[in-house]
Length: 264
Image (cartoon, rainbow, N blue to C red; front, side):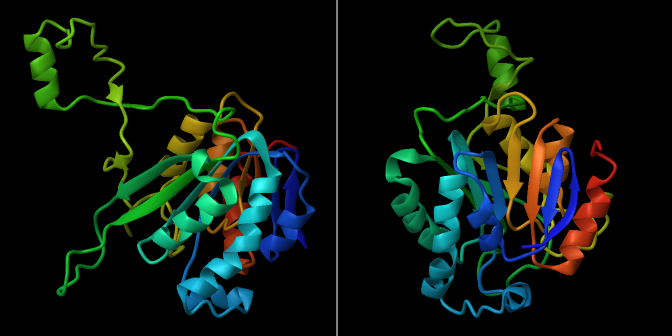
C-alpha cells in the first residue's frame, strides 16, 4: 500500500484498493461512492486482472464489497455506479453482502451526448445502487427539484394547494425521484472536463453527499478515484476524503485537483 498524498483532510493512495480496504478500521467511513469498472481491458490492465465474464467480475468485487461493508459506520451508505453490463449481477451480490433489507435506492442517471447506435436504442444511462449498512440507522436528507411548468400552472390554479388542501412549497420544489435527467454527462467542451475518460460530473456526486451525509467533517471514500470528482465534492462540503486508484494518471490528476481545497 502506497500513500500518494496526504493533508489534514485528504489522503490519496496508489495501490490495489483491496490492500487499502483491508487496512481500514471497522465502522470508519460515512459514505462510499465508487464508479466501478467492468470488462474494459484498458481500465483493468492496471490490476493485472482479466474480468472477461460477469462471474469473474463479481468474484473480483466480492472481497472488496465485503471490506467496504465492514469499514462503513452503522449509519453509513454505499453508492456504486455502473452501466448495464454489470448492474443486474451487482444487485444480486449486494443483496447478499449488505442484505436485501438494507437496499435504499436504484438511481437511474440519464444523460445525453456521445455516440448513437444504429442497431438499437442508444444506451444513455447509468445505474447507481445505494445500500445502507443498517437501514434503520442510515441517513437520508430529502432532495428537491423544480416543479414542471405544467405542475406550477396546476398549483397556481388551485391557489397554491394540493388536491387534499395542503400547501405546496413552490420555492422549495418537489421531492426528487430516483431517475435523474437534470445532470448531463461531461462533454468535451465542459470547463470541468479534465481529459479523463470516465470522469463523472461533480454535481452528480455532490447530490449523493447531500442526500446521504449529515453535517460536516465526515469521511467520504472513493476506491476507484479516477479523476478525483468525489474528492472535490467531499472537500467542497467540508468533509474529509479518502481516495484510492492504481493508475498514475488518476493519482496525478486527483492530487492537482484537490490541492486547492485542502488545509494543511
